[in-house]
Image (tube, rainbow, N blue to C red; front, side):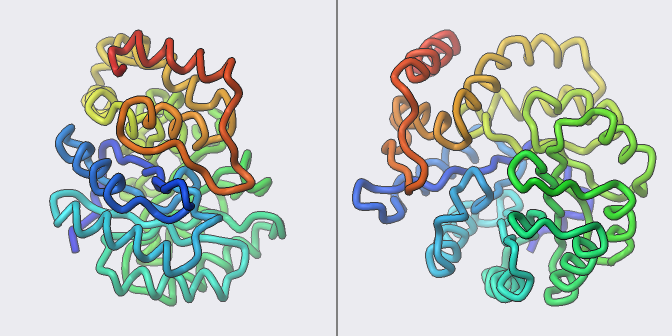
Length: 296
């Protein structure tokens, strides 16, 4: 396993390609990972929300992670998704994922049952105690309807193998609070492409990106400019890629990014219910964005 205690840069929240019969398209997944490596992405994150993890059974989830890890072949870290709303099941999944030799886990706050802050602390404490590998917390209230407060994250940061957080609240005030509160060695990654520059300016370490599925090279360049505090140059890059960041959320993620990848020739445009194709109007908007970036 690679040492990720000083993780920085841009990682891709990988989509999970499906065939028309709903089976995992392993060939397309390998092709996508190889594209990421060619474009010098810093790390890979399979089986998060962008990877439609909620519709993968455990066998499928482990197979996706195994393919990504084997294709990456130690060139970049692999941080695999292992989260949910049932602590016992999350622990079982985390143990199985750990056996694959991944470099870390990304675990989302429990959704639907809406635990309070003590419940969140006890949940992640239990998960962390069940495995040895590093864990990144994932706070994304727009999806889970649960916001893990900075004070709770600070408590969790005292647990040895909880090393960082993917922060996707979209709340710059909360991000500022976190930057002032967390220990210097606690890794803070943006979970929102568009908020990456301010998060890094406040002391963050990088990004787990949706747009890097489509433009891994540009997103990595953008993040590295931010990390080097070359914010004037970073703003120029963001101005160029911002329309794609926005277009990827014309409808719920990952519907737009999978459509984009399909017309780029990377994957087939297949989803698992309850996700379906986006409207024709939005498809035309996405096509224009991709054309402007010379991606199609």
